[in-house]
Image 1 (cartoon, rainbow, N blue to C red):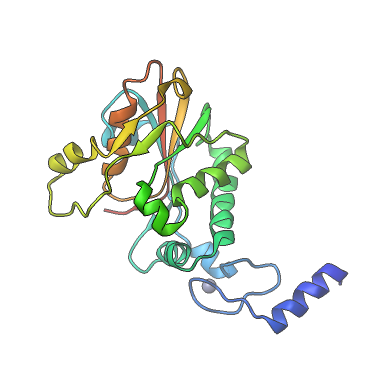
Image 2 (spheres, rainbow, N blue to C red):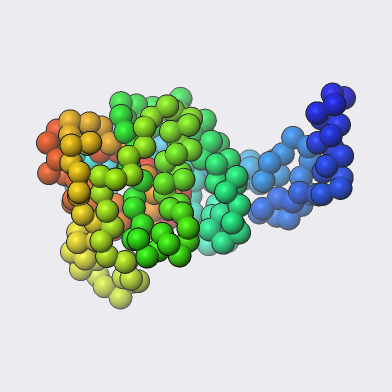
Amino acid sequence: MSAALLLKSLSDLLFPRHCVACGQRLSVGEQHLCAACLLRLARVHADWTDTSRAEQWFACREVERVVGFAWFKHDSITARLIHRLKYGARPELGLWMVRMAAQELLPTGAFEGVEVLLPVPLSRKRHRQRGYNQAEKIALGIGMATGLPVCTDAVQRVVHAESQTRFGREQRMENAAHVFKLVDASQLEGRHVMLVDDVMTTGTTMDGMVEQLRGVPGIRITIFAWAWTTD
Ligand SMILES: [Zn+2]
């Protein structure tokens, strides 16, 4: 056994680490999830050269591809990972989640042609409360895995999103269109932009971003959310 491995085993013995999903103790080679939970994590599995989902969800020619990594269901492994990430203040968990996704997605063509990563912005108020933007962290992780630059100052969130569940889809889309504001189009002109978020539920947030960006000359858009909901 190497010295590093011995030290790691010793540290595991003294400070046991546990699986985020099932609570079982992790062995030396495991990080955040035990091998069984990692295997059980429901992947989206998609062929990213098939554009039908983009047509179905975002009926606009600027959106080329819609990419997801994991399915989000109530009380699923994905849900527990995201919950721990959001409320457990463990930034290294987020980086691990993104690296894992990027490693699995890279060979599938999910990032093909993408030139710049654009995280969905938080309102200033929310940013202050939380201290960081989840989507930005994910974009930075993808950037580390792919070498793509991250753009954080081209779009602003001007309205703090309230719960919109009481509105119908049309009303939600109408509201979402005014949530974001394009402040610097020059960084995005003629480029293939990947919009990045943690979870995509109704797609309304992304609709609002697309609505703001589709007028940028020559833009092409790929949408990425680490997790997709199943409904
Ligand atoms: Zn587990």
